Length: 207
Image 1 (cartoon, rainbow, N blue to C red):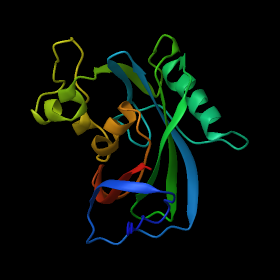
Image 2 (cartoon, one colour):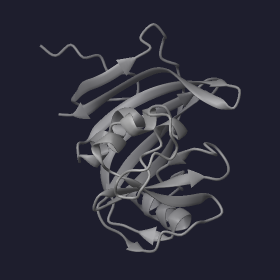
Image 3 (cartoon, rainbow, N blue to C red):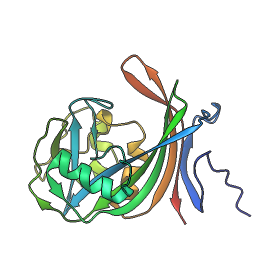
Image 4 (tube, rainbow, N blue to C red):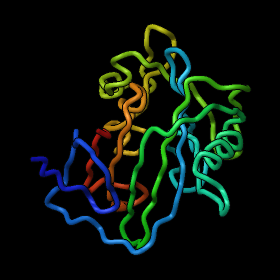
């Protein structure tokens, strides 16, 4: 019998693949705010954006933001991709993430999307600077980044995925997105100066 206990905010049939911080209680919340995050894969490379301002500034991430009233999550994701990177893509739902930050009473509910093609030219905007990254094995599994070099250069000429300059949870689920495996997870963060430290996390694949 499956005895998996899902974190508050997650539901459905999920198989855990990593969890941590179990000595810490999940942070309670009373409200949920809906956001999106979109990733574009083209051949053997992944498009990320360097966040230039606002929440998450100076980190690499996908492209996304808040779902506006009257929008579906995929409509919001396509709008944000166009606004932040100047491209359009046939986005498909890839996963769901619940994030909480210490001191807030609401949770980020993030619908994550991916696409294997796009139209337009990735273009820097006021908020994001798009950049392509390699999808070699060492890049995807984080070994290149753990070498301590940034950006670690691969034989294909593209830098490796810069996990050390991304949100701390990304290294756990991004590989599943790249491989086309649907996932869900939750991460609770505490602020330490200008950084956010992951205190408890749980991620699983959709059965």
